Image (cartoon, rainbow, N blue to C red; front, side, top):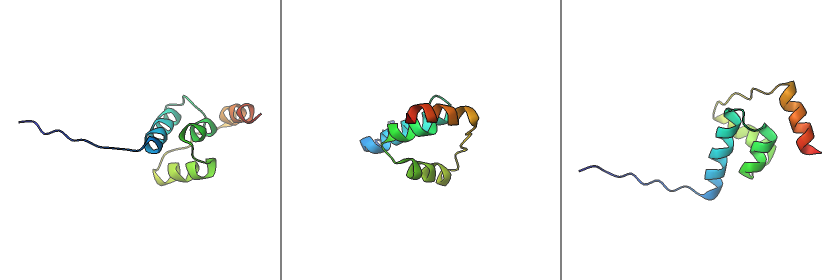
Length: 70
């Protein structure tokens, strides 16, 4: 008989996972990912650092973030 594993996560955890995934794929900027997750940018940066996720943040991403902030 096959075992079933059930894992429950909160909406906040789900949003964080999706935002990180989209950021890693380059689908959203870091600012947009933090907004999607509902986590302030400074905390989001800390989470990425703790998870060992490369920021891959360059001039183009900065330009996109500047537009997003306007």
